[in-house]
Length: 182
Image (cartoon, rainbow, N blue to C red; front, side, top):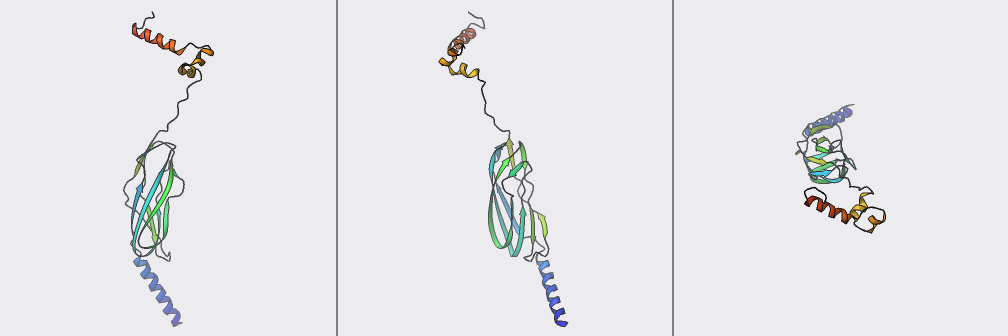
């Protein structure tokens, strides 16, 4: 029975020391690299650089969710068991759905001891990153009747329209005489 109590006391001391050592979060810096502006319905590349410094082995999970109207191809998160000074790069493609100016919320860091006994969380002080989404561009489609007028070719005469050159000469005469037809 004393052997059991000795092992229980040793295990309780180990758990207590572990919980005390992992009260403070590891030092995490986050850098986001993205363009300053993009058109709606366009895609852009989002590069995250995460640097984690910890003097003890630590489990980390970093959640960096973009604003709702910016939809990534893959979930932008980072996690693992780390120790020491490590740098990791995460890349994702993001589609901008609506126009406007969008700012990323600060990322959330969750950390725990290597055994996963108790998870803690904190919001990081990351620099504010925003992107401006402009309205989408649309090509101009000319109606079928304007194309022969603009073509200045024999096609306009064959379908019964006047020669565009004669229209141009009438317009130049009209404007040179002060708006009166000669």
